[in-house]
Length: 149
Image 1 (cartoon, helix red, strand yellow):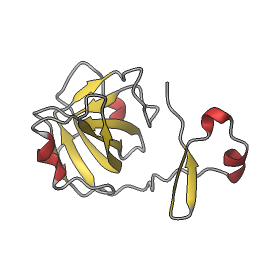
Image 2: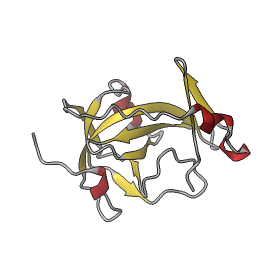
Image 3: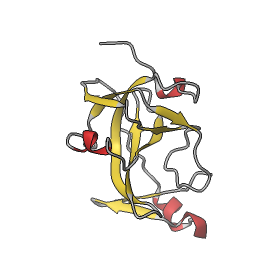
């Protein structure tokens, strides 16, 4: 397999990155302009997580046919940015990924020991502060989501 970087290697000084990532979650998010962008939460083999976006531009359709949560990809040639203050983040990572026209994503096989599940004790949910009471639920579980500043 070709050499690659880990998410912990990323910085804003280059777009020549190549990482192996698993899509943990993926959704369409409406923008103020009326457009929609694709948002993702990605993880690498070291269990680092990062927010990523595919802007609603002509190259957005290059990705839509084969991107699926739970699948590993080799992600190459993307932009690494400092996060925007007003944009909701779902990971604590200090940078975010933005796909650009040169970005490629190819499915790969990666053996990784992590399940990437986040579990929350019921007491954490029961005694949450007001600003912590945003929940995601599904298939009999719930977890707290915090906006990262």
